[in-house]
Image (cartoon, rainbow, N blue to C red; front, top):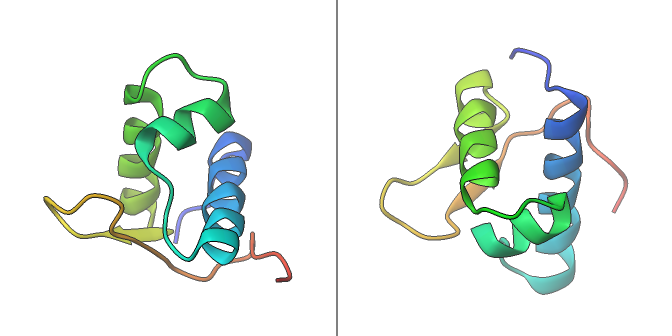
Length: 77
């Protein structure tokens, strides 16, 4: 597993805390809002990189189908 950048760690932490709080993963729009991005493309590219680095697993053609893979960035529930 390739280490995540600080910005990617921020997104991973957001994904985990959002999932714990709401019971599902956030939408690209919610991720963009959290990151302060004006476009949904920003989190989309970040998710692609996180998957490539082995931090998440996504199901193709399924919205909000993101599985977190445990790593050193984990935070307590």
